[in-house]
Length: 225
Ligand SMILES: Nc1ncnc2c1ncn2[C@@H]1O[C@H](COP(=O)(O)OP(=O)(O)OP(=O)(O)O)[C@@H](O)[C@H]1O
Image 1 (cartoon, protein in one colour):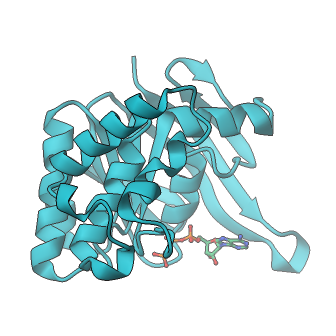
Image 2: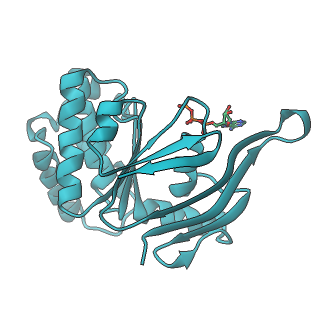
């Protein structure tokens, strides 16, 4: 069984003169353990697709089955719950809170989790160690390099043990060396079984994934393995 099955997903923004058909009928299966790049021209619908996959937005039409459950008729509150427990997001500019320490930033998704403080601390310290930034836990984001901040953001994405990591241009703000290091982190997580989907404009990043899905004009143009 696929982790994700989307069938003929369409997304239209606005209406009348302002209508934009961002997705025009996407079909895609993502299996547990996949490591997928989504590539395509600017405006082709990549972020729209990722937002739908991550339950940040709903499709206008089509079916989204996650872990065997149909999600398109779920109410917003249930979708938010789904998002919090199943998905870890990573974005280009890290989206860390400036005046929180790295430890506090990684803790954010656990703030409402029913987990003891001791367990939270253990989990965060373990992830910071895996990411190689355990010595930065009391620092602020501005005291870290871009690559270190992205590692912190990945630790935050992992802290709830999500089924899937969705990353929108995670290396877009990094130089080549840091970009390669972040891709190594993703590769390691994938080797350990984590399912990962990355949007990228960078062919090098795409080639480090197991599959590339090319999107053009709101449709899947090609899937390269
Ligand atoms: N909230 C919105 N309201 C109206 N139109 C939108 C909205 N979000 C995206 N669009 C439009 O939908 C289309 C697809 O946008 P999307 O951001 O998904 O593309 P993308 O492939 O991720 O682009 P990029 O590579 O530049 O980030 C574009 O024409 C965009 O202008």
